[in-house]
Length: 191
Image (cartoon, rainbow, N blue to C red; front, side, top):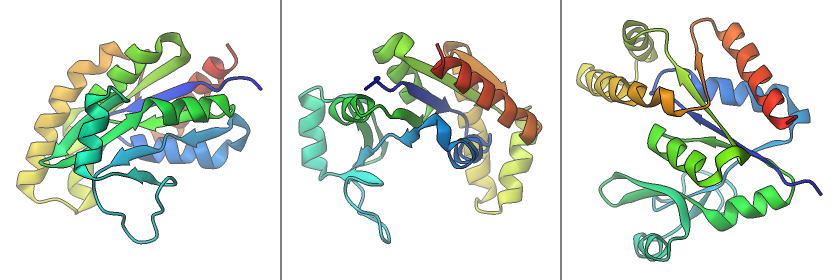
């Protein structure tokens, strides 16, 4: 069986990354895409099952695995709340011939690309402008003005990482961005 490949998507919040990834996975089953199953220290929500949506670990277990260098990338997103990607989990998925999709922050995306080199394609989804990003975040109606300002500041910082990715796709017009994502992924998988 042929080894799978890795496709890493990163973007500032509100860029449309999750929309593009969801579309790609739903509309193109022939690409054999599957999500990376990450670890987290948060509690399962709703019907989430261990090993399916996430691998749920205690904070102590997570820190032990950090100390044992078991993660490709990890981050303490909030105090005591960790998320990360285990090397063994990704290798298991690749060995099964799955093309593994990562939907991660920019630092995680850079770390995965650095770890896997040419086996990974890193795609940065960029908003057309900071003003458009602000408009999208305001339209969501899920954040306070302070939270939006905080996300904008973080987005401006994250956009400085764009040149570290293999490809930058500006999500100005959704159907055009979908076409670019599809072509970029297909070209990579066919290499």
